Amino acid sequence: MSDTLKEGVELDVGTIVARDALAASERTGVRGRASRRGFLTGVAVVAGAVMLPGTGLVTNAFGFPGQPDPIDPVPLDAAQQFAGIPGRSINEQVLNFALILEILEADIYLQALNMASGRPINQPLDANRSQYRRVAGNGDLNPEAAKVAYNYLKLFSYVEAAHRDFLRNAIRSGGGTTVQPNPGGYKFPQTPRNSMSAILTAILPLEETGVRAYLGALRYMTDLNLATMAAGIYSTEARHSAVIQVLLGNSAGPAPRPGDRTVSPDQPSPGAFEYILTPQQVLTAAGAFFA
Image 1 (cartoon, helix red, strand yellow):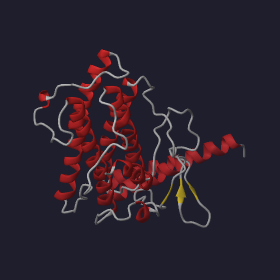
Image 2: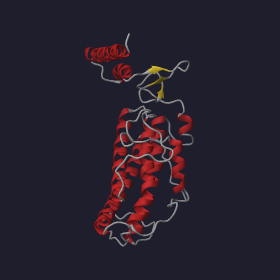
Image 3: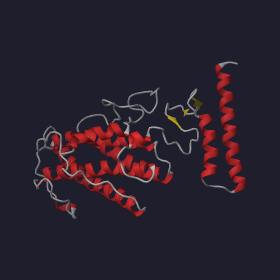
């Protein structure tokens, strides 16, 4: 059988499995976990899922191994990746992992905004964002770009605080325990000059890490609603990163950085897919901002 014909047969089998699973759920009226499991099992065939010999694990076209059941894909290294992070389930651990980052980002953005506004570095975020006035110089930016950069810095500071508060409330409302801020606080690894270009340059690595963090942690989540929420925050973080890159005169990205992993072993071009980091890689990178 030719490779082309073989691929066509495999695709047809996967399509039939997916179709039949979906049809069965339509006949029974089931819309929950079981029907999604049957449908995704068929989709896994279409995506090129294969069994890794001797492991009982399934890998797919993206190269990620997981449990045989694609609706409950808790990778086997979850305990190691989220070691020490509180949570009664892997989903709660992932939320607390995200909260570690959002607490950090909210604090660093606050420091940056205060610095650019001539305020004490740790002064709490003002309830009225219109009270902020820029004192930071342009740096390497032209005057118009520096003005836009300050407005985005102000906007992003409130967004990161909203992410932090949202995650805290989500965990606590479910009866969970939230991680606490670092007792020593947070700092820039190197204090930037008080100019808009220097401040954005100092923030960029943290934003890029945050983008990769959500993608790296998403595969550990088994609650589809929580995964959708996490993807929504990921999208916002990616936009923050793109805006900063463009203001600094760079491509919007995504662009590879040291330690990156790719979402596919056959990535068609450097900017086609976002890059990812494992949770442990993220925590190591975030540690540079811990005082």
